Amino acid sequence: MVGFNLADDAGVYKIRDDLALVQTVDFFPPVVDDPYDFGAIAAANALSDIYAMGGKPLSALNIVGYPPQSLSLSVLDEILRGGADKASEADVVIIGGHTIKTKEPIYGMAVTGTIHPDKIVTNATAKVGDSLVLTKPLGIGIITTAIKKEQVEEKWVAEAVKIMTFLNKSASEAMLSVGINACTDITGYGLLGHLRELVQASKVGAKIFLSKVPVIDFVWELAKRKIVPGGTLANLKFIEQKVDWEGEIKKEAKLILSDAQTSGGLLISVPKEKEKKLLDRLISKGVPNPVVIGEIIEDRRCRIQVKN
Ligand code: CO
Ligand code: CO
Ligand code: CO
Image 1 (tube, rainbow, N blue to C red):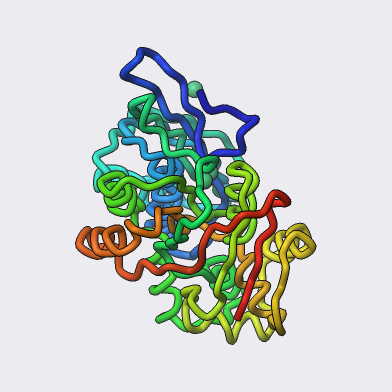
Image 2 (cartoon, protein in one colour):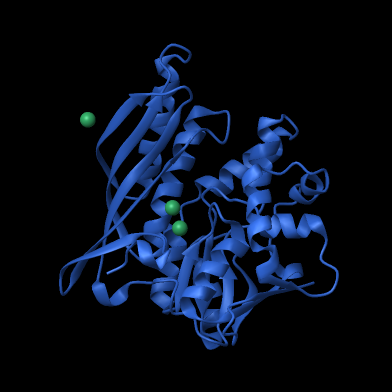
């Protein structure tokens, strides 16, 4: 039902009229120093694509690459423990996995979930007039790059870990209970990259209000100092000409809007009249700071406007 051609978050395969499988896979090298946190982040990130589709994850397979010569196996134990704890928080059972030797550690999961075929939340059904709600602040890619360069205080590392390990489960349950038009999660292509996929699939345009976009505090400072991952620079290069920048938008703002996220939030396209209900439901489900950052507009060229 949903495959490669649609650039959506996960694949969907129909089994019966009332049952479909949702499947996704994600893995990467460490984004933080603490192995337990890395495991939890990788698991939360892998599960996120199922939540973005409105699915319920059931089981997962661990995907592991490890250098046994250079790292003690106790580090691997910690990575797997972080992943297992996060999976159990999500009521997901890890039923197997596979490990190979690699030069640097790699961890992630292939996740399987279920969904009713009529209730798939794709990114192709956003409607003109919808409000765009974002459930996590931006800046994770920039912070994790600063961690690698030892340019960031412990307090900001903890903040980034808290954001990345926060499951998109409650946000997904909130949107399903309210009824929304479209959703995607914000990961490697950044806010603008994933929004671009959504507007193209839905054949609409979007308007984003920069002043409303939530950003982790310290990230503005890091972006000014050009501490930015390569992926974020590549994202901006790809998206820059597809965006109408209205007024004077600073380079650091463009970088933040393009920042490659790991385990970022959900971007939800909700009918304007349900906006308040969605925000209330997100907050009551424990999502710390959901924000309306813009709206869907009519535009056959599928462009994105960014205003201050
Ligand atoms: Co996704
Ligand atoms: Co993914
Ligand atoms: Co095997």
